[in-house]
Length: 269
Length: 206
Image 1 (cartoon, rainbow over the protein chains, first blue to last red):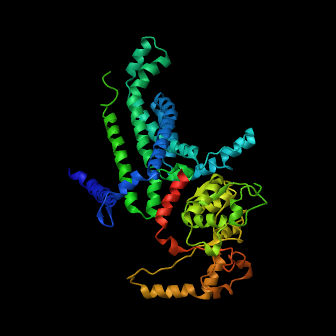
Image 2: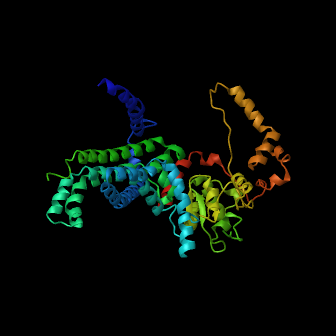
Image 3: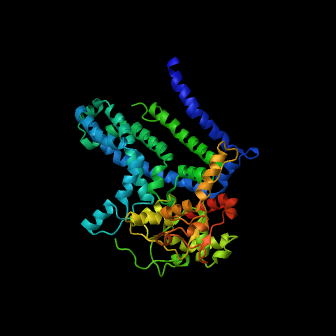
């Protein structure tokens, strides 16, 4: 217990206490306690719209990440440990790069005069693709950010699978596709769900990516918090938005904890 | 990348998408943008205030389909032109001049400008009030003001300083005696900004 003290003090002083202040600010106005900030979130179309955008972008980015990440994780899981260790570096390289740097790199890649469009124009003669300052831009940037997290989560679940099940299926005459469909994939389902929830949690609070790669129609809740903190100086509404964001994220984290515990999915085999 | 040879010189022309087709980049802030919209709609610069908000939003409705970027970060008023993301933006003379000095192909029209003010303030109860006041005196010296105008290309607060500015640099200063130019009224905005910023944000997202 005594060894927990430093971490506990750190979290209480620098995380929990400020969080309580945010919570308090969201419930107070010029005249004392008020629900006005929360009522504004419900009464103005702005907030519902941005919440919807946030959800849309999170879900699309999560699905794309799983679609791209699963084959990579599967491939890595099938390598011998030494080869896998080498290949994982390629997954971790973008993971170690700051999201700010990555987002700026994407503006150079995806712009009208960017590398992608220049290639399409010069090599294929295809007209300019609008990939920056819109939804595709945000989804590309975000999927790129989420991939390492998902791949590592999926990889853990795939590597820890007992190969005995696969071998049994093989002995019983199942082909590679059938083994994947009936054994490997179902066994990795908790990993897929954990990866998806992790993506949803991480993308919920995205700020840099929509700000740098998105257009006005792609702003997410965090950007709206920023707007209220810096532009309108309405910290009450900014706090209320943050509280809503925290509650939504907490729900997903609770779900994640259940999946990780293996209670929600997988079931008895 | 070839630049358009024809370009708008006033806000009415910036709104004229038939004569000046192209992608426009506008600011996400309602102050300045509202003034632009009203000037484009034919309001006389001297009679801008009190701003006719409804008329302004109607004017903005007309140009909205042609605005490809709503610019939240001020440096993007230059970089979006530089990177060929937009053809025309509302930018700031000092930034345009700095970009030109570093070789960016960009120009600025002084035929019609909106001029916001900068403020230097000393906080109430400051421990260094005397020093702060001396600093304010210093910044208001005509030679310092002229140096500021030469370096940053913004109009000096003291008209006496204008005589000390070189003719070359004056080309990059808006002429405040030109009746086409408007001066932003911060007092009018003071208690309306928050509500209108929110409304403008909503308007952009719908």
